[in-house]
Length: 92
Image (cartoon, rainbow, N blue to C red; front, side, top):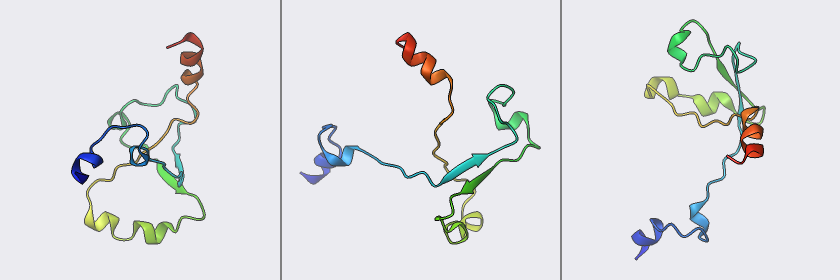
């Protein structure tokens, strides 16, 4: 049954993996995690933005986004997370 196959959790099946391609970098006035607010509502006047890599055609990609959607999901990674090394070395 194809429906059951889609919902299977067999780690050997190819469709259980997702590869994401990095398309840009998020920029904000905060250069370090110290002093960065945990919630954006705490600093409503601070503006951040996504800087797309040159091979992304940002205008075409974003065309109609603001007119048709109230929110977007941004999937991101803390690539400069200094706590990750500490957690790995302590065994957590």
